Length: 507
Image (cartoon, rainbow, N blue to C red):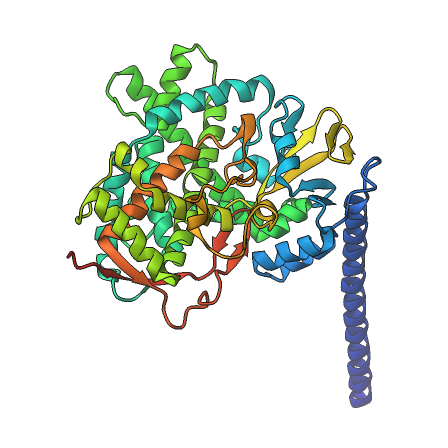
């Protein structure tokens, strides 16, 4: 009797377990169906063209999202966009926005009054908003005008070839034990540019060139940027509202980064009050200028400006340097030509060039401009919202249209660039005339990049000094041997780019 009862109980237990598992599977299936329906409806909504934009070619957001999630190389994603949009210089996509892909149309948009074409502001409380806040990249109106003038003056004061050159000397000491074997170039360029930014921006030394390790602060900052630049977080904004471990990690990392920025601001304010600091860094210049001009800037606004400077001031420069170093490794004849120019102007020993010498480096400057053309660190220039109708050729964009400029498409358009997929610095040394807006790496018009001169100065100094110090090559087994592979993030970052550096024997 007990045996029969026991078997019956076992059978019931198995049936109950099967029932529970079946219900669990049904629950999971229903959950994913609901998510799928929400996503499909969301994509349909954002792909629906507003009234007045019916004639503009369409590029499916779903296709772009899928290509990003597949981690396609960025040039493949842009090739997809080109095929779908045709040769119209304009297309509708990217979550209900219009993208501009011709210099003529870009000029019209970028020269519009900043009040007629305002920057598109991130959703309040989004991860993008939490990091950038109301700093220059997303500010509008009088707030933007006030802080843009302030930033212009501060950047001019902070330009210091000596500080960048001294930091490059520290780079050489850091690289010494790494010579004659592959090293991660992008990671190394990030180290030197973040140290230069620390000194130029805050009068602060991060120690990235003193040891292999990276401070916890820099690790936290890198994690914040990886989330802000993630295709998933950019294309599906509500993901940051989910209770994900990565979201909590983001908020913790941002809290540490903000703590550092606020501490630096307070410390510098106190030093200025006591006349115990006479630095010419960006933060000091901004604090002194706000006092002189009687500008009421709270600590949160200063934090937002410094966060923007932090992101733009080293990430884009380290990417651009990595691209130049890659192509000079791929084309050794270009490397030798650049080196001969630097030796002719600076001599045969690594020295810190001055401002006049930097102006003479014509071929080095052409390399830098060509790298920024072929692989613009920010391939999409941030969105604008139209506050009045704007006519672009046969198209009239209505009020409230969101517009972006696709710098990659403009830089690779064969109508304006001969053999656009070929790396050729000589194109910037020729007398050939081209449209003024066919090169928009730093945007243009009233809202062009405030740090443009600083970035170009850094690149010229670091690249010229490296040319005097080293020769470098691509490893035989490099995944970038045929073409440069790029991660499609907020900025374009090289994928596993390694080069072999050897100390140059002076002749």
